[in-house]
Image 1 (cartoon, rainbow, N blue to C red):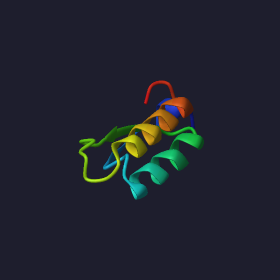
Image 2: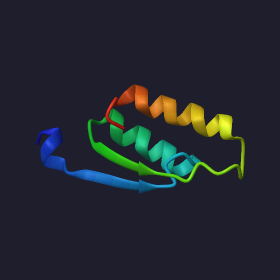
Image 3: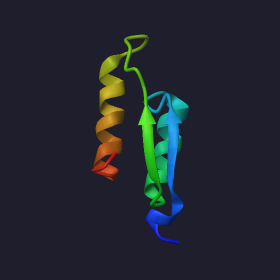
Image 4: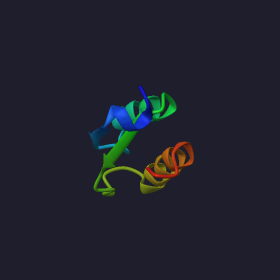
Amino acid sequence: MTKQDQGITLITGVIGFIGFHLAKSLLLRGYSVLGIDNMNDYYDIRLKEERLRYLKNIDKDF
């Protein structure tokens, strides 16, 4: 099955702890992921930005 055949996995809260690790795992396995997060300041925004950069480095289309 190719990456295109798998469809897209939608993850809400993708920059939070669980969403980030799920997205990371799927991206490293070659899945396409669409992540949604409101990037609020509930906790350190720098951590959220770092997680987002990490996911984008795995898949430039993220």
